[in-house]
Image (cartoon, rainbow, N blue to C red; front, side, top):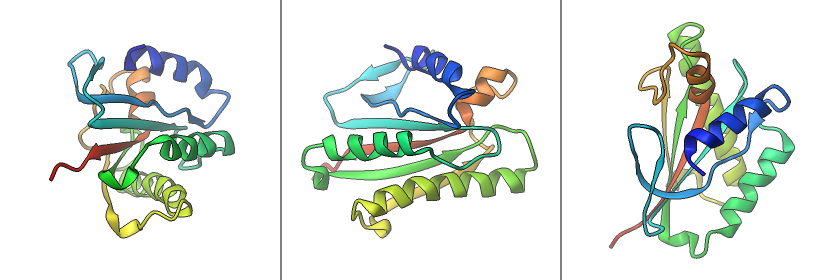
Length: 155
């Protein structure tokens, strides 16, 4: 399943759930068509999608995050980086705040799993650096997300 097809499924679920399921695919880099390029399990990128103007994650989605994190063997061998994003609806200041709130929600879940907040890198981009075009509705939906990048630490 490609990332794009997952997003299409997510978009159809979007109207029912304010937050959409995470995608867990081992990848090293996205290609131009947003299809994941599989690696040797050195990276996982999981994205949680949000409703417009929302930073709430419903209980089902919260459980999916927990289940995913608990499924990673030797999690101590990985670093976690969160990237918060928004679409371009609203002011830049509002979108920056919204991006920070979305990342904080995911960070709260990780903290509940006894993960050290100080050890998790967080970058909030707001409406800057969109991966998808904000010129289309599907692009806007896809940009309302937090990407959790779980990357193997190489020593």
